Image (cartoon, rainbow, N blue to C red; front, top):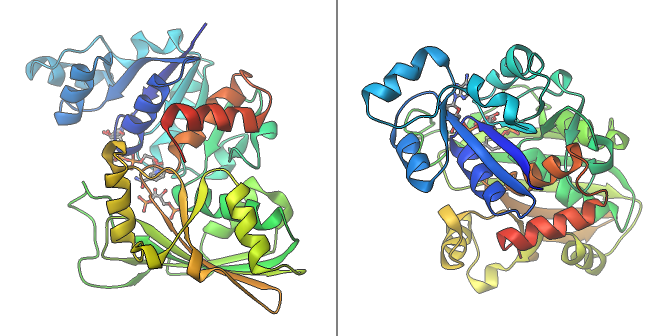
Length: 340
Ligand SMILES: NC(=O)C1=CN([C@@H]2O[C@H](COP(=O)(O)OP(=O)(O)OC[C@H]3O[C@@H](n4cnc5c(N)ncnc54)[C@H](O)[C@@H]3O)[C@@H](O)[C@H]2O)C=CC1
Ligand SMILES: O=C(OP(=O)(O)O)[C@H](O)COP(=O)(O)O
């Protein structure tokens, strides 16, 4: 029987998680929530999702606008096997304390929440077994997910002594007119190291003390970009390329093919016919992969709105003990979504 999934917060991540859950033969979406009756709420109803008010006091707003809702989150939460919380960063932890724990329902939080509020942090390659059967788990952020996947590839062929990463973060998502910068480069967070290293360690504790990161925000909405420098005990460029080939959800792209920027990579995702031009995989520039004195260099991009989506699906399977082999879950999710 399909497990019942409730998505709390039908925004950039929530709507993608809903569509991905709907594609699984072992899961069903029992509802999605919105805080206001905007175009996303109307489209959710048009798509056939049962819509609920995330905040009970706002129920009247939906009725006033003629947007059909089935009730509030409290009318559906007891039917859920698991809630995927996709509320804005910082709100998930409040929902965890005030709703999910009270109703004793399993919940996944997203990367905008801190590791300390949950039992563990999830990446399908690294921490599936640890999260198996757990109640409250965080799927780490888009940037951390991208780093975890690439470190997995490198770690599969050599030992990582230490790693340094510079993250160039997109200023806002394409639908977000309120954020910037419009014409600046902003060290963000302003302190070095940034939180991304500790976030990777929350998934891979053996990297404690080994990963240092710094980040800036730039005026682009398409993708993040990372420049990685990974000191190893020894490897070759061919071994790294082979490891990337064998690692799920990462792949190489070539500047020679015209995939020489985030702009053309997004065009590629459009040409693939991906929903919302989502690129669930991490593209690594083939030309950037190099090994100098045991140090691996590479550059990669991250489609911030979508790389965490398959992770949420695998996280549901782990927490609800639906599949005990992470690679089988990854394969099933990849097949259902059409991941390369
Ligand atoms: N957008 C991105 O690039 C990524 C975001 N994340 C994380 O995913 C989470 C969600 O982010 P987005 O989807 O980008 O945000 P968003 O702002 O696009 O969507 C959030 C949705 O939650 C709703 N909401 C507001 N208050 C709520 C409440 N109290 N209860 C339930 N829903 C509520 C909002 O109305 C909105 O529909 C955050 O933790 C964020 O850090 C993770 C990876 C990438
Ligand atoms: O939520 C995200 O971006 P945002 O906090 O810039 O909106 C992404 O997951 C990036 O998170 P991170 O750069 O803090 O790892």
